[in-house]
Length: 449
Image 1: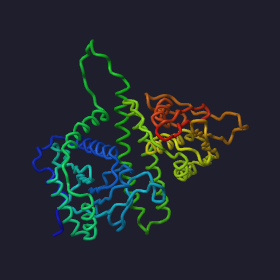
Image 2 (image 1 turned 60 degrees about the vertical axis):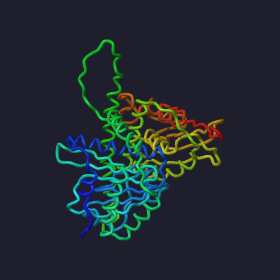
Image 3 (image 1 turned 90 degrees about the vertical axis):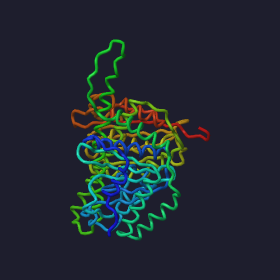
Image 4 (image 1 turned 30 degrees about the vertical axis):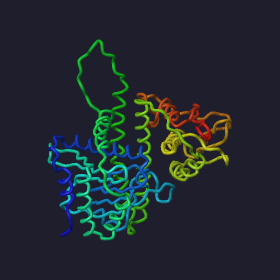
């Protein structure tokens, strides 16, 4: 006996659930929307402990969650053979950077486990299982949060772990004991499907024919563009996260030639940069559609810049651009959202330097400015003959309400208006000069605000 298969687990989740009617494309959209809905809820709740179990590849991809949750992933045997050790999960940070993600334990799948994804997340506040199931044209997304079903699935997974790795089975048992008794949250289950529907409605592109009604006000034409843009950014980020996971599994091997390791690391970095870049575009599109109130808190901008500088330096070095920090010490904390500010700062770096000639230099100045803290990104060009002579500004054309396009390089970036709106949602007042220099003023945090 080797324990139950994941096919058995999916069938248990499908028990008493009507058969699905989706095709493969439709059910995959449901899966990715469900993952985003679940992770957004966990982030809003500030989940700081719990477990997750997934097959056949990692399903969670939000770094803020992964570093708090203990995980087990069953992957195809050919991947498991790459390394008997735990592998780092998808995320922005490498193992030697601040905010490193916790490692998860990886085990091998069997041939009879099937290929459909399955995910269990058990935390003190949220306990849920997600899976895809069913034959072609009768596919369905399964979501179960009742204690009876979850207990059965966890019991079967525990039996399977006993056969594969008794030590890991003991770790899972201890982790579950620390969480406590499973409790069904009917309100969470009731909210999940409406939130999933809202996400699909907001992000999935679609075509509809509607009769013209004179009494009905016309829709904002930009909303169709935003729908498509959000869907494209989602479809780009998710496969890149999977590619990065496989790359980091390969990098665990000790027998790879140096040239292969270097190439794999380059691919890893490029994937991370593009995931962050498209994530920023996605959030900008969301903000254009539904401007939300800022939820700002005390943020140490000096510490963030210091922590992120090594990765920015590595990124710019590959293009022959140098980075210098000029940070005033002992500055007061600012009011912002540190989790969303980090990728936005990376976006400003990219905005300043994309298309720059080699040997250019980017300097980050951080200093007090009255009741605010001023962050300035200043570019020095190699062909600038004086300190006051302006550099060459990129020629950008607006593409919709979110993006701008540089015809000379073919690169897409956030538009000026979208960038200004994103910074405003983070508490910053954004100013830009034509020669690439950028200044952002942040309000100083004071007790009580």
